[in-house]
Length: 247
Image (cartoon, rainbow, N blue to C red):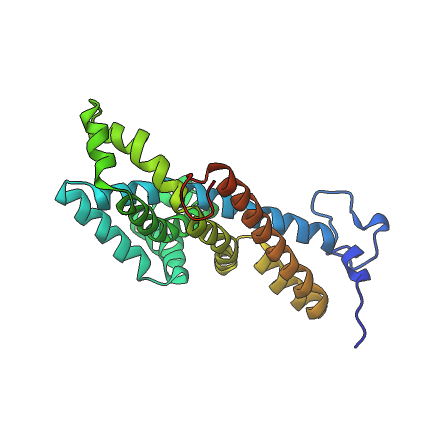
């Protein structure tokens, strides 16, 4: 097997070699530049979707543990809806169906935002379950103690329950954060220029399948691994004393 890595320094338009592997910019770029830009898009979509998932998932977790039955049922319905529809189908719904139903979305919202929302809401259902489990793990006395101190229910969640619940659920949140990076590959189906799309198009143009998919795989691994290390560091810093592994 003979691998040729020099093609990464070729111009994507002309196929000619570029000194230093970096083109002058603009529409002219090398395959190396294309791959790095695609990696940037993958990280952008993943991080934005993670923010959406954490915010919405936290609210869903709170709703599912709230005394109000209406909120609890809404949280359960949200979880079942987004958890039981395949992610790729949700991406197509956001990208094709919703703009058809609401034409204003075609001009007002970019395809990247639609993919971020699809990925974020899909993951929020899973994070909501984890936040719910973290809150339910806490003794009931924590909630009663907060209210006994004169806190309202929202204040009790904000200052007492959620800080402790998030410490408990950091390990599963780490897994979800890593999954977002991997799941972002579905964005290629709607032409978002991220790593999966780069791998598909570049391999078809050059026929260098091994030389393309090996680096792309490594970039996905590096992205997920860095998230894992950051989460492990945070977990060690905020671990509750007296729990397993705590001091």
